[in-house]
Image (tube, rainbow, N blue to C red; front, top):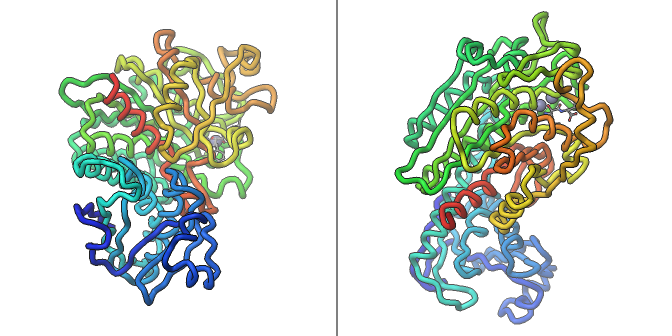
Length: 479
Ligand code: BES
Ligand code: ZN
Ligand code: ZN
């Protein structure tokens, strides 16, 4: 779908369909109120009414707010993709904020068709956006254009992440993920370095090697960098890239194993963020490190009872091979910190089911030592359309991952607070200098969905991309 911003009044634009968002109040004053009401339209949030004979589609909205407009736009875009119209027009609803409407359209109409023998193709081609402002407030066309371009880049990067997450394990293994990273690097002018098994051994990255040992597809570590001239600040992103998580010898029950192709969503988010940041040409140096592995079972599999020595020399008692993501991240975090002296260090991982228990399925769990950084992040991502909740560390929980025989244990001794104890495990691999610059994002809940919600259809959602791009943009503007 193309988005075209036009310097024209809404009424001057010729299109197959005109889109209008109505609240209960604005419905009352509308010229078509009686027809709409007769058709049962009450302007409830996300309720749709199409008057084909007039070439109009209406969508109810609780108020003209960012989240409401985004969600309604997603519903409209999904509906019209099945109608057969070629284009539609919508007017500006918000000062300087074209993003929610554009995101709603581009994210809401996404559908992954690669495994269908007869992929459905939407006839819909272009959404015309009128510069005509619903509120009548002043905004320059250039400001609108910049906001629109940014939103298109960010939404397309989110859909790119979704495509990668939705790719099945037979088509996406660590090696293929490294190829995808290389392709992105070639297209977007990024540097890309891939570590194969031998390099990982040279780096003494025994934790990721152990996790991937029982797979025929051996692990890879990928380092992508976006290096603009005169960067204002430097950020390192680390992603968990389990192209499949069977649980290993601590095998998952069969129902929990389904959807575990999504265990690479952290890595895919890192790729999506790098795509967006490089296309937005933000003056921020961004490094992406991905630990890609497949957690499988064979005679060589790592075992509960093994003790692994991670890259930083710490020893880890393995008591559950399904807590593999933290092992992969341990090595990659250690390498990332030794390689780049960043101002910020963020990691993204579908790390724990416990995070969903704590926050529900829609919210990313944010953890870290610095309250200042957590607040800064929350503030910057407000309005991004992603939900983030903070889960607090405390010293009592640290005891739960103590090991009698090694430096740390890969699971906690008690079944509560599992998202936090996983993050406290990662903390063992964060250097003292980086502790206050580090945030861990557990995206196990929002990364993948089998029941569509908000702008997310079935499958990968691209969780992590929009919020992080917003944060990095705020660094570019305020550093
Ligand atoms: N990849 C899973 C976490 C997960 C679960 C993500 C459900 C998305 C949906 C992770 O590797 C895992 O298996 N974690 C275990 C940890 C436990 C063994 C301490 C879990 O959450 O059950
Ligand atoms: Zn697991
Ligand atoms: Zn996992």
